[in-house]
Image (cartoon, rainbow, N blue to C red; front, side, top):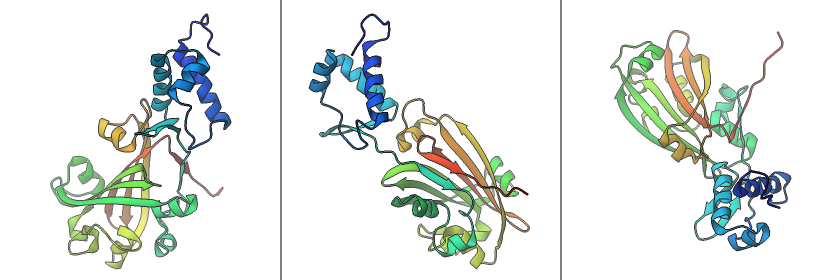
Length: 252
């Protein structure tokens, strides 16, 4: 199956053939790749060539190595980000707002790790919140997982005059999350504004999200407002190979 006269390196031909088997379903999600010995025999190739082919599949995000077990076809786990209802009061009342709502719709098990700290607002955050640079903000730094795979990083910043003495400064904010706690304190949300972009990940982002080499991220910055002020800036980084953004608009 390897054409030695094509000019295409043998490891790329082997990787392309294995990719075709994965995409066709012949190698099913979660199933192991044939052993290195089997691949050597199948393709009449050297071990270094086989290893380069498998490395190419790994950097493409098609397979994942499990220590001591082998190499397995990565199961598809696309998270659909439902923009239509994710921030509604009704969704928050059912504890299905934002990421929890995505989990309910996508039937995956969500988990979130949270760190809370206080810092001084830099110029960008101060401008978005319409406060003076250096104003104290509480920072909620979250790592979000779908079926134990990290799919999103999110960092929320809120002015401390809104959060001090409330569960917003605790790891567990309770059912409905930060927005429910804001409204219970009398800060009724009026609207949200989101800015969506894409870029290449930082080294830390690539590591946390376990991104294949060359894979971009989707960035979403959301600003939440009451009728008279901005109350939160939320910077989100989404694994582009794991996310689909779903928007619905009325034709009016």
